[in-house]
Amino acid sequence: GPRYCSFRPSFPWFGMDIGGTLVKLVYFEPKDITAEEEQEEVESLKSIRRYLTSNVAYGNTGIRDVHLELRNLTMCGRTGTLHFIRFPTHDMLGFIQMGRDKNFSSLHTTLCATGGGAYKFEDDFRTVANLELQKLDELDCLIQGLLYVDSVGFNGHPECYFFENPSDPENCVKRQCCLDNPFPMLLVNIGSGVSILAVYSKDDYKRVTGTSLGGGTFLGLCCLLTGCETFEEALEMAAKGDSTNVDKLVKDIYGGDYERFSLQGSAVASSFGHMISKEKRESISKEDLARATLVTITNNIGSIARMCAVNENIERVVFVGNFLRINTVSTKLLAYAMDFWSKGQLKALFLEHEGYFGAVGAFLELLRMTDEI
Image (cartoon, rainbow, N blue to C red; front, side, top):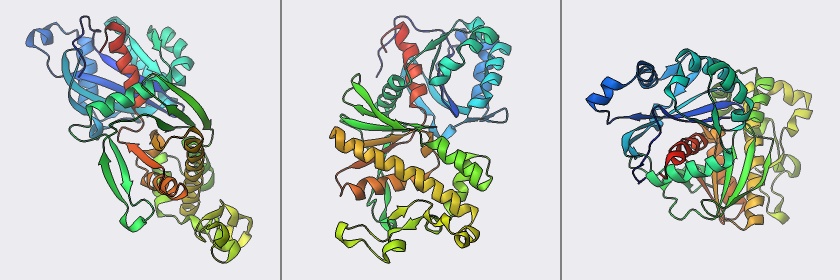
């Protein structure tokens, strides 16, 4: 585990990742507070700690993902719980104002932040809350955070999982696994947009490519096509829909398989291809449209990831990012696509804390700034 810090940052300990859609916040709650410390703790610090740990929802949109908390972590010689909190980026100014109202700047802690918003909101933090952000690169943070959480594990369980028999929907089962020897890996981070990294070691990686067709695209198109308002609602609709009413399959064109190139009749030949027909447009449901949107975006990401894996000669493909939150349709589809199109050569791996690694990486940097953790 981390070594004892000779000089540790003052509480509270936070790491934040301000993305295009969601702000992710990790907060370390010390559990080894002595009576003496309790006595000396300033009121504003106490109020922040109580507020964060006694609530699961904050305001109208903040959520603490209780099921993800990491317990009994020892960091910088302190033992405690790491909490995971998220809220929409469009509420960022409200959060900064809360920082001002709770007099956060008086606590003299460093606020480590990553993601595009660390740059975009830097002035607001300074002018509204009198806070200087320590800005960090999001892809550095992503990798550091991922490797750290994988190394400590998930409260005694592995952080990583995959699907056994991904090409057989009936017998496809989730299995825990260890990312023992993770390098090289292709890391596919699916947020509002998508970044694909080839990672060769803790400090050696490159951004291979990306695609602007990501989680934001799925939700944006879903809102337009179905009138839904939230990611949860979009996924709920998609779970009930049938995308084959919207997409043209190989069999819709061939009447069966395209045998010469062993393309199954059930493969999608043209995403949304049926929508050129007025009759079809009138007979589909909003659920079908949500499902088709999800499948289209997911397959496209899978296809690009597979090409990158082949190009970079990497067999291990790790998918992360909040697009995968509560989204078994996409995780299983990615597992299936990787396995099927690579004839079993590529393995798709997933991580339980999918969207939080950037925030964890920023948090680790806070501890590293004062001493090597």
